[in-house]
Image (cartoon, rainbow, N blue to C red; front, side):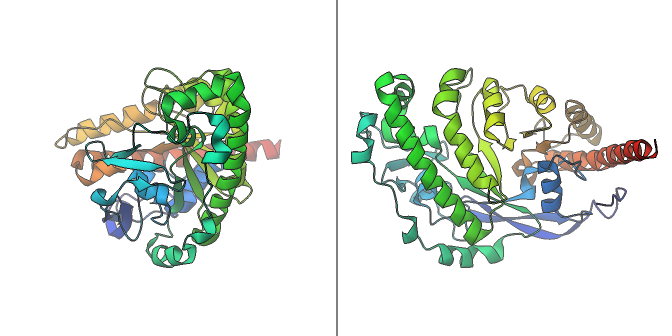
Length: 378
């Protein structure tokens, strides 16, 4: 793809607005001219090419369909028909009751009565949903006209393998089921069945919405360490995570792993599973991960949140320092763009990161072309 120099005038002035779905509402944000679409640029990063600029999280159009009961139960619907927070909670796809907690902006399983106390009973106690009963065509007709086609389309799966097990058994029961010898076979059988379910769900996301990225939620760590050992993760979770990743890849889709906690020591297993993207929380060594695994995974990080009245020189210095941590990395997504709506300094910071990476990535691309040209002449 032909590179064009950064045009400070043309690429810095808004040319209109773009819609974003948010919880309980829709938000319009400024749209800017770019030499290629945000979608094309994001795909270049995912293919481990040098993009035109460092993508930001709003370069993906996030869609969390209302028709999936999990999303209403968890209080996370990004849809043409928003769900107000007061209507969040209730039963998920498996009939598990969730309670929405306004103070934290999310839901928890209704405490005190887990569906399973013995994982070996799951086939008797857990009824898998029939996805044919959901109005996929109706949902697509309402949402597709509103989705920005210039952005890459990402759809969330709220409850992954371990999180789904937690929803059935509560945390303690789920953690013990992964390591107790008389429970492991039942966990393997449940995860095997869940992979069939997720494959069916991903197929529908692809068929009805044209989804290009699946963001799969499955937290693996606390603030200080993973919930389980490397060996347990390899034995009990890796084979099934890989199957879900494969469900995306065989349809030409990418897999974004939403995995909270300090889980960097488990990244080799993510790589083995074929995970395309991970946006780690700050307790992980994100620059180190981005450099070590740059050829096989993409990562995301949030720049410092500056005071809204920060002067231009502080904004520029902060942008340069942030990018210095990722010198040579073109596998990064800049996160936190939601702050730009209310924080003018952060909005300027994102513009500065765009400018600096437009210029830097152009230089890197031209340098590599020069190197390849020299090799072909020798």
